[in-house]
Structure formats: structure tokens, C-alpha cells
Length: 466
Image (cartoon, rainbow, N blue to C red; front, top):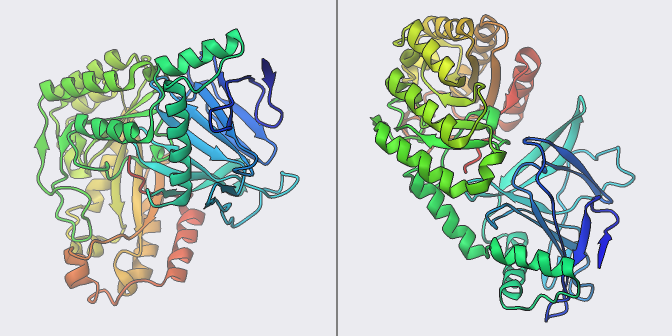
């Protein structure tokens, strides 16, 4: 029997259960849509942004009134991988699933109720996210945190997923209609993956990129756009001696064109039909433009062809200003014509003295000229600044000189800020923290962020691993 479930969305849902354990299961298959077409789902207990064209093609709801007080919703991509899980209740079995605490209610709703929700990034990291903190010029602001395996919501979600997969694959799903039989066959053919298979897929993903764990960072423009960004590792390390940073290996190693092509082929195989949902590429790691320009242009052309990306700029990259300045205008034009869309620089501070003390290896005059050159060519530029860098001793100078320097950059330069994060084993932590008068207080950091946002239009950059 096909019916529409009130309060979830307008798609027709087909009854697939009950399972042998009494749980009621319903499912639906969202048909193919125009590439990158978005839609909104209005829930009875919240507003969820649903990017229907982004890896959310197959949906399942599970309920058990005597076992839980809500409804599970699972979204699967075309490879059978769960990409989004939410629950409308507060308990499932013995697990208590409290709603998130919010800084500010979503006043457009008749009552402030929010469901626990998490979504899986392309590389396998689960985030608890899409919680509305406030509304700013009709834009939703999200809070995100990495969901660990010990989290009760993660455990309840994965246990529920595994039970659905087990019943689906062992004949526990009953089909009392042709629609139900067809949908069950789709889920089996995918096949829908249980949680251990999802972990294996994550290991496969990181193996393609030759990383031993989470990818540490990506350009902040894409921090919440993981479903649109395909990471490609074109070089290893960063080469920077910065005393505060432990994100990258300090040695630079450029991958061969053959290795990069093989990576592109393997990533296309990993994504399968999901390639239709991606429009961006992220060039990793910390200084991607160290790759010879002709080689990088060739790799971008191959990526565009293999990933079937339209003839528009599509590639984001991290780079150093000193590296870019070694490239001729002709080389940079070649990269733009090959698809380079945006270059992200770590400015960190507009105080030259502070940059020298933390061994940033960056000349502000050269940095300014680099940004101007890229903007003239038509390549977008974004920069990162760090709140708290230089501690109490440099706090005022860091803020004032950074604001002044960034305001001197060409219009259209995007600005992001993040809070200083230092490894206990870093030189900054061992030798410089005391020299800088200790860490800046949390309240002062918040005021510094507010000034960056007010004076520079800066947005917060959250380091979210894939």
C-alpha cells in the first residue's frame, strides 16, 4: 500500500514491514532530479534542509511504539551508504537521545523542538549537525561536532541500521504489494550497508588518498559542502616551519601525474553514480601549487573529464603566497583556464613581527601582491586568520594590524577566522606560550571574533575532518 506520511515530506512512502521483531518499516525512492537541484523538507518538529540531489536518493523510516517514542529516518546514497540519520523522539530501547541545547530558538516554528540528527561526510566522519543556532539574514547557521562511536545516539542509530540491513538481506522484510517488492529489491541490490561496512568504506576512501586517518583540513568555503567536494591529494605535506601548526608533515612531496590519475580513477570508482552529485574538487595537501603548473593543469583536465564536471571553474586549493609568487602570470592563467577556482591562504596575522616570531615565513607585502595578482587573473582568494595567536602580549596588535592589513586587500577577498589550536608538543606550546604572556581568555577570544566579523565580514572556519 502506498501512502503519504504526514509531517515528513511529500514523497509517497511504501510499507515494507513489519520486521520479525515488530518494527514498522516504510521506504521511498526519490527519482533522479536535475543536477544540484535543492528542495526543502518541512517537518512537523523542525525545518530540515534536504539537498535531494546530493546523495539522498533512498529513504527508510523505522518506528516501534513500544520500543521508542519517535521515528528514525535513514537516507542512503546510490551505493547503499547511509549519509543522514535523524530521530524524532527522545528514547529508543534503553538509549536516551536528548535534544540539543540551542543558543537561540528558531522563532518561525510554532514550538522549539529539534530532533537529534547526524550526517556522514564523504570520507566517513559522522557529524552531529544541522542544528539551528540563529537566523542571520535568512541564512541557517549550524553548529557541528564530530560524533564518536561512544555517543549513545550513534550507537542507537547504528544498531537500528544493522537490524534493518539484517532483516532486508535475510528475507525479514515482507512485501504485501508490488510496490513493496520492487523497493525491497532495490535495497538488496544496492546493497544497503551495515555500520561495519561503512567503516570499511571509510578505510577504502582514505586508502585512495594515501592518508592514514582523517584529512585534517579543507578550504573553509567547502567546510559544510562535503557532498559537493571531491578531495584529490596532489602533493604531501606543507613545508612550513610554523611553530604553532601540527596539521601537516613538514616535508613536501609532489605526487607523480601517474599517481594522481590513478587516484582520480579510484575515486570515481568509489563514488560510482554519486559522481552526478559533485561539482567541486579540493586539491590537497597544504601547498598544492608546489606541483608544476603544466602537470597540475593536466591533472585538472583529467579530473574534469573523469568526474564529468561542466566547463566551469571547479577546483579549490591551499597554497602559500611565496609559492604562488614563483609562478608566472602565464602559469596562473593556465591553471585558471584548467579549472582553478579558488586559492586559500593562511594569513594568520597582519602583524609582521608576530609572523616572524612564529616562523610563518611570510612577507606581508608579498602576500598583498599575490592576492592582487590572483584577483586580476580572475582566481578567487580566501584567507584565514587565527584568534588568540601571540597570546596576551600580542593580542591588541594582532587584532588591530590584522584588521588594517586585510582591509587593504582587493575587494572580494573572503575572510575566515578560527581559534588557535596548538599541539602540546609544538614549539609554540613548549617555548613561546609563556613568552607571549599565556593564552587569551575565552571571553576576549569571543570579542576578537566579533571584531573580525564586524570589521572584515569574517565567518568562522571550523576544522571538520573527512
